[in-house]
Image (cartoon, rainbow, N blue to C red; front, side, top):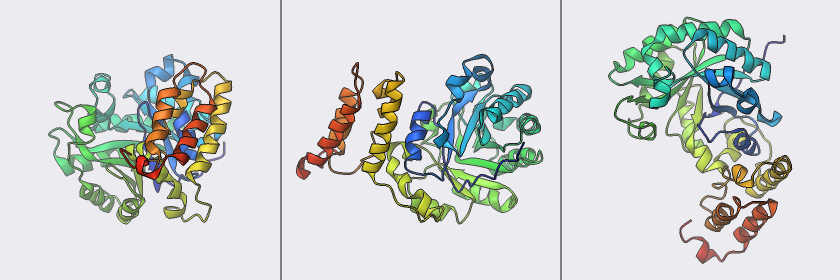
Length: 336
């Protein structure tokens, strides 16, 4: 087997449950060709005992693409890593950051930060099974774990296996008392701890995640770490991604317009509709494309009200685009 090329993770898009689906990633690829995309988390149980194609299938345009796994059994994770490699993924990532009660009960996610030796066993088994990179996504800490010392122990223990890429959400996770949504917002961002981690482990690739909303902010963070991972902003304001290739990667390619993105996505929708997909399952990912522009409210309203109807087709998107371009400016700015 030919060894895979190293991934350029200067800009990555986070795994987001129910958001970063294959349809959504295909949409993002109309905006950026360079960013590394991550799937929703897939548990080892779902992959080993469920419909693999449902969880793993993707479109060829989605590369470079990483599969995020949830689990804590070294043998099961190794098998799932092999499956991911055989399916053509460019990377497999272990989730050690999700704070939800549901995954904690299965020893998945942020609770694993209290078990660095177990995580190291998981990573070692995965690495022995595949040639694609095996990476970890985690928090800076959990609950009352001694902040920086605990983070150093966690990363150092896993790095000893040969793992070199750590994606660090710069917030603690409180596993008791805060919901997953609150865990994304209430614990304060502590970028300084991630910067210090890079200084203390200069040989590791450190990717920072949490609260990143602009490319200017991304460029500033890249002075301290090796890469950034953007989450919800890529979903709510996807046109942010249109200048990633030029701004972050130095590519001199054409900056795609929103209308060009829409045309590409309508072509994709036509293909998927012909296969039996429902329009609203596709269009829910694009509602923020015109965010902040005149007509954005009308664009969202038409799609939201009409895409779910039986038999809805491309004409809904055409109608939304027409409304976007025809509304009087004064009306457009009300409530956009």
